[in-house]
Image (cartoon, rainbow, N blue to C red; front, side):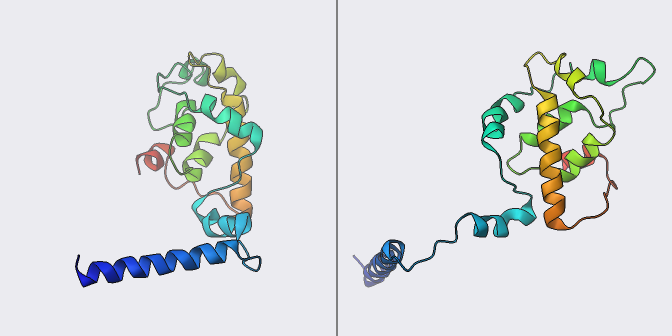
Length: 161
């Protein structure tokens, strides 16, 4: 074994011992949830309630089949691929980081999301998804101090980014 390897192992062992002593010390203050939120709130991470945690797997079952588009577009409207659809909201939730700009563009103008859920073959509850996303958007806006909504890009452009 080389001296460099021996020195590295001694250094790592020393740092690990210090780490354990700090963790076991009664005087060591753990930063906890407040520090976590302070570090990651700018990235859009907000707290998820216990009921949302239980319902999240159901919200992420979207397979992108577009069955929810039928009640979304009225008979006078034509399908516009640039317009945000209920499917896009479910796809926003399937990312590792919430995409609040895309969600804000998608939620603009939705009054009755409950009608979309009846058409979903996978049983995605879009009403609960919309309620959760609106709550998280308000928390995110409160943290970021935004007073105006920026919709300079369409939701499709945000999702593609």
